[in-house]
Image (cartoon, rainbow, N blue to C red; front, top):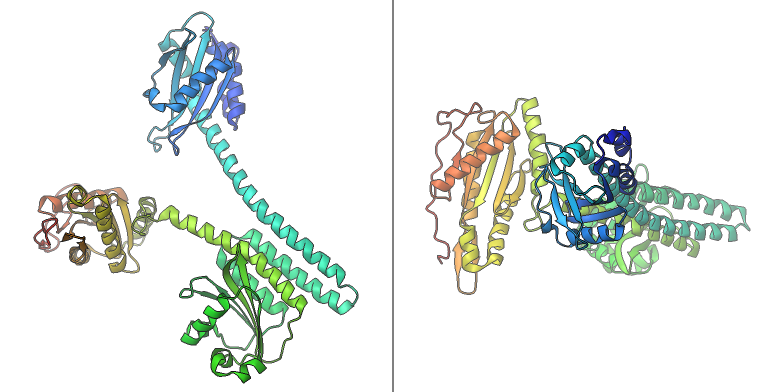
Length: 556
């Protein structure tokens, strides 16, 4: 090992920190580490904590193939690498040479000391170095920070590239549509009036295309589209009916000045029947006053709209109707030409990927904050809400209470009836909490059989009363099987700011302690924290909630 490693690498830390790609960082390490550690072969193994496996494994030096094989063994079986922070492991290669493996962990105090990467060193010039001396030497440089920065940056670049490719595909489709529209306008330049009309409608395509590209919010896209179409065609009304579930259709409306809104008309019984009809069509549908007058019984809804002419164009993506563009005129007859229908169809085609991508984006956002089993918020979302609501309560000097709810006897349920019945019991609690909580309350599954309910502007007495009401409703839930039936129960702990805690973490701790007390007192009961913010016992602040006698699991 070089006695003075800084002679060949005076600013190695700065050089490493300046490299934001894993390949560039590993190259820099390979250029300078031999002079520091006395090795001729070097490997860098980056650990992906999300996947719980090694990902990028890069080798350099005298024997890269041997090094790659060694790293592949570790990557295939990460349990071989059972090192604690600061340890330096010695591994014997099949060639008889020695390799030293040094892990690096995240130094951020909020990171739980997660593994970042490992350096693998072999082919030492002067024999295997003293491990303590090598460890002290390597500790002089900011390897952990540089490796973390490079891996996180590289992962972000890869994710951005994936997203960019996705949007490029949409861009290509939009560009193709724009090219088709330009050709159509070019073919219709024989008459100035027609040319002018199509130029204006080409701008409409561009406007909607720009909206599609610039926003992932479905409401922004559809509200802009319906307004642009309605004004461009000088219509009385233009609607986009979005949804393929006939019972949950969203209506986006454009209306000309001085006219009343008819959005709610689509939610009436006759309006829903009409909506079901046009959502079932996969080709444009004309509506004219003569047709309505000839068969008024079957066109009562259109008659109620005073419609003189209308056109419904489906918005289709991969043979699935996502919605309908409905153009209406109530004062003059509008003769929608073949060119009009073609252009409006192109607009609908342009809206289809926007709707699909916005729905996908919304679904991903929802999954990120929603528990998959129960449908309530997940732990990550709850932690954000707890911090936000606690800061608000503290800022405005308001009370904030927390209920921690825990299903009783889950292990016994699982052992007796199986985990599927246990999951059913957990889902029942989630349903009761979601249905029984107030609109301002925040309900979440914190983990396993434990739930949390955050109660803004609620004191300890009211919180305990709400908790007991929830406990009774949970206890009313019955799980039925082919040859068994039982009622579930839950224990609940209650804490309140500022009565019990002066921080969000302390608020949760007090509620959790109260939950433990409820468990000790026989379960199926509510207990309020008796500890103040200073950690000392408080005098009783509310009447104790009488607990129901816990029911034996499996009792019919």
